[in-house]
Amino acid sequence: MSINHHLCISLLRDCKTLSHLKQIHAHASKTGLDADPLIAGKLLLLAAATLADALDYSRRLFSHFPSPDPFMYNTLIRGLSESDHPHHSLLTYNQMRLDSVPPDSFSFAFVLKAAANCRSLNIGWQLHTHVIHHGFESHLFVGTTLVSMYGECGCLDSARKAFDDIPQPNVVAWNAIVAACFRVDDVKGAQRLFERMPWKNLTSWNVMLAGYTKAGELWSARSLFLAMPNKDAVSWSTMITGFASNGLFNYALSFFRELLREGCRPNEVSLTGVLSACAQAGALESGKILHACIEKAGLSSIVSVGNALLDMYARCGSILMTSRVFNWEMEKKSIVSWTSMIAALAMHGYGKEALQLFHKMQEHGTRPDGITFISVLWILIL
Image 1: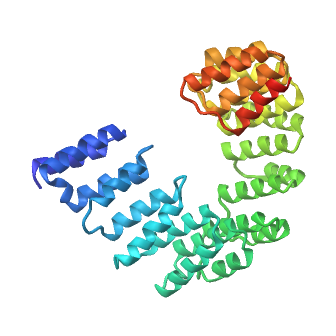
Image 2 (image 1 turned 90 degrees about the vertical axis):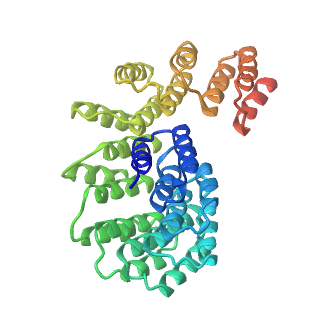
């Protein structure tokens, strides 16, 4: 290998941003290294599956490869399957077939995930026939993805059939079929499968917790939670958000206090869940205590947490604190942030200030959505 080759590999290993990736790509193109399969594959992997906001660049990068191999196709299919436009993953898979590049187990696992994210049962069925044609129906990785895909599409019978086709399902496959039962509100079926599982990991317990809370089976969730051998941030967040979304705000607050007593660090989901509970219950003092904890933990910069603080203070009647959070504590603001502040001002009788903020939002380059316009119409009607 040349010095240039080693340098390029080293640079790719340390690459953290899209602009850095573009510089490396330019260097590789200039030196002819972009024709090297290893370099080309690493460039595509970073753009499609690792770096944020680089997916469009990965598609342009892919289009310059004269003869993409299965790894390159799989890398792009994977990245697109997890994007906001999973149907592009399906189109890439079709192009792979047109180019007579044989799909492997990774191809099917990634493209089935795309079908699941599109909630397209018809496409899922077609892909299943391709899986059978290529002899992967009993493959553990592919079979588990089939179970998940059918579960996401709400087809439990097909999910069970795919599960039964796996000769030796592992805990991931068992978790997938349990989740598929909950997807169609088959709580009893999920319970039976959970009891039959040869062994359970933490995800197994969390799948049951999430299923119970979404089905409104809160006391079953609580009993299971108390019986869990281990708990993580997901377990606590599920209980807090589950009880809050079902109107049992005091229980949600109680779980949050217990989380702190256990010495666990609250995450984004648990914080937004308990702030929602405070907002619904009108618990301003509890909300202020939480706000102090958030600042102390250095989590106030998270946009979703900031939005939850805005909502909590607005619903609890403290427009002063709502304005303080929006103007002084939120470094980044989403469309939800702007809309929440506009609605809060309007709700508390500050129609003129709400309209001024609406214009300021547009000046900052944030385009209003339907909910923003409803808030503005509310101001005009009042």
